[in-house]
Length: 500
Picture 1 (spheres, rainbow, N blue to C red):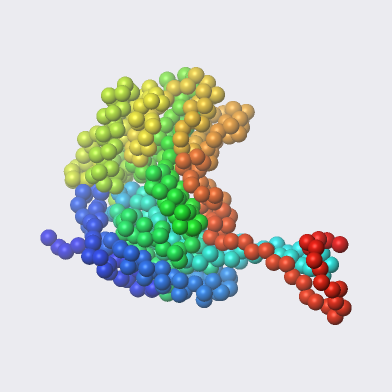
Picture 2 (picture 1 turned 90 degrees about the horizontal axis):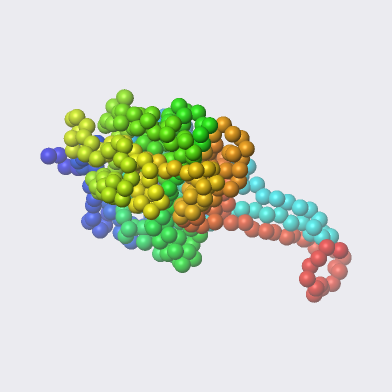
């Protein structure tokens, strides 16, 4: 048996092994076997990365925004040239289909395209003569060393929600990627260095909770960005803000799609199959609940069951694959346990994905597409974020009941409505308590020039990710008032300044 390659840290422009001697296996989920091992960082690696970032900050923050943008533009070009290399890494270590992985890389690149506009995005406001002889203006300045803690399900795109904007704004960055699929982080580091980014501006510390806690507690880290489950997001937010940091922590989801009786059922089924089962349901924006209004459920369920049962489940590198494995054996075990609970609690199991095997990949972590009907709010398959290829169908007598059901849920990440009625859609958008809403769009993920984020327990912090909100998160505003003395002194002023 060959020795596994080690995925290391990247600190101050060079790869670095771990001082702690701890490693974890990195699996290919389709094969069910390790393909590499990753170094698990300690506080020592975090200290080294933060020290490198801190040393690089003065020069990088003083670099003109246009020069920073040119480095990122070169990085953008390199990413476009290495799209398939990124995508192959994702399929190998995460399991998603190669086509889906290519789409992830493309959406990440769009954030870089936004970030290269930083000279325009950092422009402040100026007002002359706010009082006699006094001008005022505002500016946005970088925070310093900032860090990102990112999840396994989007190991290319989610880090790109963070570091391109942070670096463009003049910050230096420490990335702690998921230890389950860490290879993409080092390709990011290599391409940034090849693009001319100075050493220390971007660093990677591989690891687990040890590295996370070291970042949260480090006094020189000014801000933390996180994407992951709600319990961990809440932990990150509480511990980070207690240490005086600015924190942006995106949590879990239970995304609903309301289907009205007048919806185009063919289009709706197509949307649901992709939104529920794409990436094996391991998306924070995946649709996991259908709320069928009136007789929409009866119109929908037959075609939905047929399409779910016919999903082409393969190794993600297969050209005809529609769905790959879930990320780990533990994830498969948890998903199958929840499917069992759904049956026990009285839901109607129409398509059972348990025990799924793929010829030639019998050891892979596969779960087949699963479909439940007549799910109720008290069932664990509704209350918990399954994060797997499980779709629950619920029934509602009218759209008002559907809105009430969704607004009562603890999550508020994404939601969609399928209808031909513009009035119904307008009122739904206005009344729903969810951060991202699609009208006949199943996955309403905002483009790079908007911002991404949910409501309620799907988001902790005041700033959403990327876009204009990302620029605001990674900078702080400074207000300046200026007056130059003239030769004729008016004497001291003791009253509060005011316009005269």
